Amino acid sequence: MLLLLATASTFGVCGPAYSAQSDSQIRQAESSTIVFFVVFAVLTLLISFWAARRATNSSEYLTAGSSISSGQNGLAIAGDYMSAGAFLGLSGAIYASGLDGMFLAASYLASWPIVLFLVAEPLRRLGKYSFADVLAHKLRERPIRILAGASTLVIVSFYLVAQMVGAGELISLLFGIGYVPSVIMVGLLMIVFSTLGGMRAATWVQIIKAILMIGGSVMIAALVLARFGFNVSDLLKTAATNHPNGNKIMDIRGFAQDAVATLSLGVGILFGTAGLPHILMRFFTVSDERAARVSVFYATCLIGLFFAMLFVIGYGSIAILRGDATYASASGALFGGNNLAPIHLARAVGGSLLAGFISAVAFATILAVVSGLLIAGASSAANDLVVGLSGRQLDERMRLRISRIAAMALGVLGILLGLACEGQNVAYLLALATAIAASANFPLLLLAIYWDGLTTSGAVVGGTFGLISSVVLTAMGPTIWSKVLGLGPAIFPYDSPALFTVPLTLFVCWLVSIATAEAEKDWRLTQPSVAQYVE
Amino acid sequence: MHKATEDVPSRVTANRSGALGLRLVLVMIVPYLAMMAFLIHSARHATEIAVVASDFSPAMIALASCMAFSVVLTGLFVFVRHGD
Image 1 (spheres, rainbow over the protein chains, first blue to last red):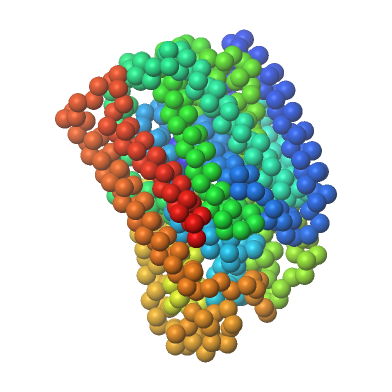
Image 2: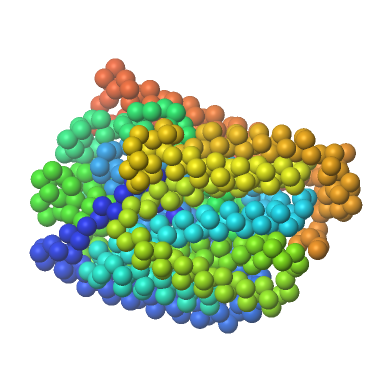
């Protein structure tokens, strides 16, 4: 899911060197990768055709009829988190500088209890298709749905572009084909898959992918540890010896430079997860609140296990790959980029077959994540934006049709933007999406669930403020302002503005709600679902 | 225009579980911030802390503790709420 803010150039730095290597092992890996890739592509298409036969109404299409079990949903949520970015980016970050990557992993894991304690149960209890259902439960529906639809589509679009560019570069690298055919291939598969199969297909592909990803990670980690006689101390000692930074790779480095920037990043991750539309959608696919919270527990365990494996893989890649001319240059940079660390490591410890398997799993990961994004965007477009703008509820048939059209349109948009952004470092869009989720969606959800005094005006003004302030401050930060746009020193000193925008959004919501409470009191008393909250 | 959701939950139930949830969020955030502060401190004073290359560093132990705490706290909450 998160292509990692700190590894901003995750896929951008991957040049064509990988497929250009003359090493025979790499050529063997390419053929095994293609075999696994074809198997996954056929499997996902079969799943989508199977799911399409059941997707005859919007509930089935958008939320799999709320019939997914807690165990299955836990695996699917974990699958959303075990993205190619997390797998390749975190391992690559550890390979490059040590413990910084694990700091991000700990932050992502710590965000899940927040999701569980604050939003999982209320979402399942009050929502049906999108998080706006929770807000609309006690606020005026039209403005709230327009705002929620707009922020969801902005977040989904940013995520989609970053994933498509990453997918194009990764697949062209792994399979030795061009960027354009890679983007079009992924995009077409994604459109067919999402438009036909809906949430059930997306969930099952996430489940299969999560199992394969965890299995593959455990296999690599076990093979790495076997090389060191299952002695982790030996592994770490070798890693410290091989790395130019020596023992310093046992501590965080980059994140220790600026405490405020690190704190802001941490706040963004902690609260951003509870505002990401494609994550929140997962709670509508289970039958009740109990299943929702149990699925979060399963997901947290699986994500924790996955990150523990990444620790071994990251340090294992330092210990095994650094200094090996087959995989790394004299400076220590891996051929194809540091983010290929787990794939190189798979080849080093398990041969070309394991490397091909892991490469194909990385591809399946991208497909599964972008499909989930399309479903979340389609759901919000049909249930929030169209309902909010038209001012009337949709009938079942119309909702399904609009959802499918929206999924297709978002897929085409993803392909076009992916092609337009070739060669661009677009990972900052993920920082932006997370900041918006933390600053615009999370405060509204929190206040709507836990504060009876929230008014429609407070939510709309506060949400709009969170949306605009997070976009503007991120754009004025060092990454976009200085590095991407080249406009000189950054106006805002931090990449993630969440430390400032989250409390400010909460404050604006509170202030406007207090100011407009009297004006909205009459309306609230006429609403049966709201009157109980009014003193 | 009617509401998308029909059933209205009991306010009392929502408030009781909500209060527990808010308290637990603080229980999660405080150790997370403590872990972050420790990591930054240990990185800035690396030479003062005896880090043995052949063992886990204090920073690694802090990270692992925070991750384990996240999982355990989630499990405890699920376990306790099953009794409701």
